[in-house]
Length: 134
Image 1 (cartoon, rainbow, N blue to C red):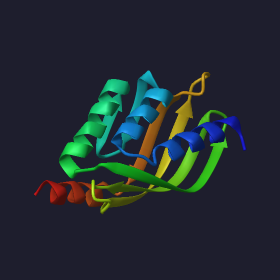
Image 2 (image 1 turned 135 degrees about the vertical axis):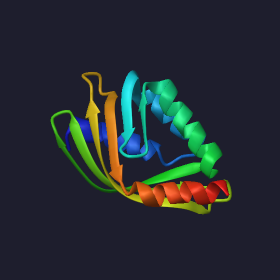
Image 3 (image 1 turned 90 degrees about the vertical axis):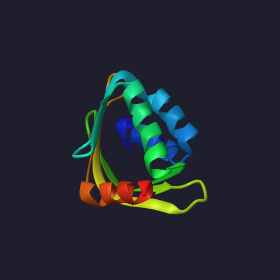
Image 4 (image 1 turned 30 degrees about the vertical axis):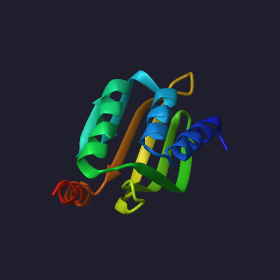
């Protein structure tokens, strides 16, 4: 396994947490200018915007924790591709959303995430957000 795969695998594993653990993972692996792009849904630049989006998901959907199921991972240089299913849970442990997706992480020379883009069915995700808000 390449170093880039190890870093992203560790980050993905750290995302199996409550919102506090997710925040800690972002603080550890994001840079002040990290681009996090949930293509078709939301794009953030920098740690503060990323943390605000996590807060928004908590408030808007009632998300209390997440689990990332890593199905496949591959790397070329500093770019790491992942196939995952991301699960969002409420405070009672009920599944709010399960999102099959493909993602790409790009790392900087220090092993930090400088860009993270996820590609998924946004219609299904936004329907889940609307249902959680009602």
